[in-house]
Image (cartoon, rainbow, N blue to C red; front, side, top):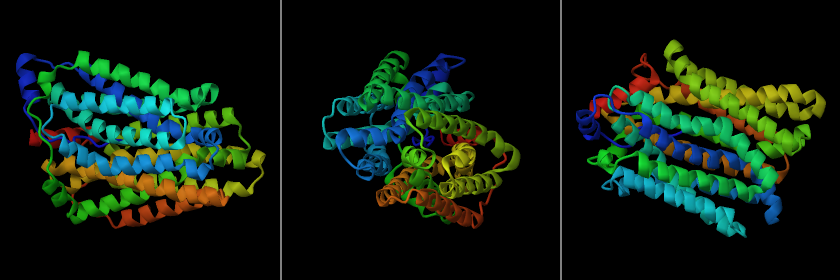
Length: 427
């Protein structure tokens, strides 16, 4: 779930191409180590919230502040830090971001109070918001124009694997060895990523890269077509995170699930989400982005409303429909994302595509912050059924707004190719 090509065109690909007929994709795998670590940390929190709350002697809703703060800080800091470090060498920026991210995880692993944990997550959020867009940009640069799509898929694949594997593994490890051990494990991943970037990527290939200015970002956000799409993203993300951080208390209250039951269900969600995000591009190419976006939002709203409805049933009766709804939720919440990226590319010029995608990511995390705050309020009130109802209502609002979206161009090219072409036109 990251924006692609926050960074604008540069001559790194051209210089690399002169030295090698076929640029290697190996550096992209080193960059993917970082996105995997970031994705694992970001998604593993949800099933661990009850354990963290119990250990720190806090209520679940109060503990959820670490989710609200993380998403809010990431949304606000990402464009600021990216512009502020615009004159840095991109490789150095990535190393610095991963060092801060690793330090944040170590701080969380050895934290003794909630305040320290909050500071740790703020550090992680700032680092994540800086690392992901720069990793995508650098991967596209060093791979050359003909392999750029594959390089992006590799870097984004780190996040996808984190959804499918890192999330359930984090839940299992956290419950087996304590929640602090998960942060320690992610810190180790961060160290591996740092070593990989230092060894696997030459500093020279990142020279000459520039960053979209604040004025360029403001110009893009003023466009009506982009604003309408960002509004859809906002309500989609609010609904998604009204529910996601509180999946563990929901499963315990509605299905009487213990730790293993929660971990298994989170694994189901993760696999479904990975299938959704990887198949979203193919579905987009076949049926068009507008249809896939609308269909994903409709299915997601139905999944959330179903989760609300089954709270009235006995656990034994609610089991199967609840698990089906969880799988539909995981699939649809991320099948929407590739289609939305394709529509943002079509809504603006090729030269502005990177900025549109960057704004989409900031909007997404702002929505995550709002949604997690809403969910915390619902949990504190003890009305667990309201989580699904509120999340479903948000997705219905997104669907209603989506019907008013009139993209000037319906993308017919593959999603990755469209993004590659957008960057290629600027380079």
